[in-house]
Length: 494
Image 1 (cartoon, rainbow, N blue to C red):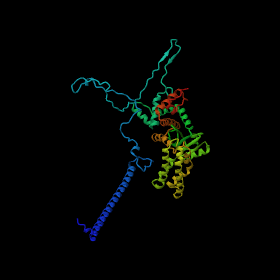
Image 2: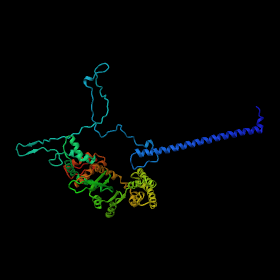
Image 3: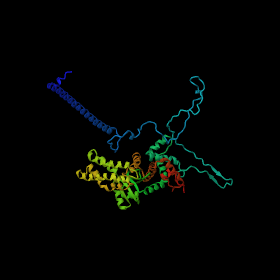
Image 4: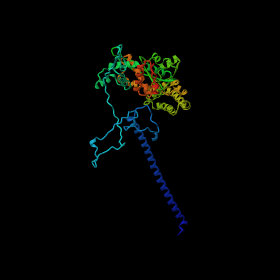
């Protein structure tokens, strides 16, 4: 090999130049690749942004209407709720009725050899079929046998069926079904009468109402006992909604009544009164001693100050709702407040009864302090009558009641249990428009109390109603609370 060229300066310069040129080419190619990579990243980021916009638009068009705000991070598959749909579901509460299917004798022939088919002992093919038995109204003819003694001194008649009133024509079980249809399923009496006529029973809505009036008398003692028990709890929920008293010839004009609701664990009671005044509030709360969770309605505050027997804790869900109502015009401010409140609810979800107070002191109190400081700094910058101004005013005006839950683990963060308990009343109001007499408002309050308390206690309203009536027909003073019914502790009649 000739190494003489390696000692030539010109040769070495030429080799170095070639290397420099190759290095420059590689650098240029690297810069070009980097540029392409940046463009690809930009496209990917733009695509992600477009996907987010499309998802928001789809949610606005097709998503469920809710106050819940979307989370910033998607849930893992393990955290997602099981998918619901039209597939088969377990039916643990349905009665199991076996129905056996057999081949007719003339079809028990083997299709292969024409021999006789015999049963395979214990071998069946099993499947499920959800069905319904047809309901029918019947006219029972009760024949009460008469007896006499040989002495002809007396004649004794066998006892007949129990009735809500002597000589009554409608059984308690039928009246209970009417009550269920109206106060649990919100079906007006006039509509029930039409359904009954279609099934052969001719009755008018006034007759059905008369039966409900009789039924309510048997429930009165339990109704009053539920109210009394609620008022013994250290913390209760309170709220109210309108109820209509319609003109029917006895009243000169329609009048708006108010349905007041009280809620304690597994109990709810209603009073339908002719106003939303402080006097009506006194009737509802009486001499209650404890804590009332409510919205910012001034009657609760005034009654608390007047009586000195209870204090008011205010609802954070109402505060959140005020800010979300003005989100469209004031998105920045409303979301700042909503994020603070979201953090408070996150603490509540993590807390247990034993850890709730400590977590509120450590984690929730700083959030409340920051929110109040932000509200005080922001309020002078906005118009007082604007949506955000009113939301900030609502928050700051209720500060004392809103802070009350921080120092007592028994106090809930919101009044949602009572708002949920009023849904049945609101649905009933929308379907049968209210009551036609003052007695109608009393009956509605009694029946709604029984129905909704049963639901809260997770017992069958129908079974609970039947048990109360059975007991009260033996002793009108007998009381059966949902807890006693659930535990099978019905008291013996006096």
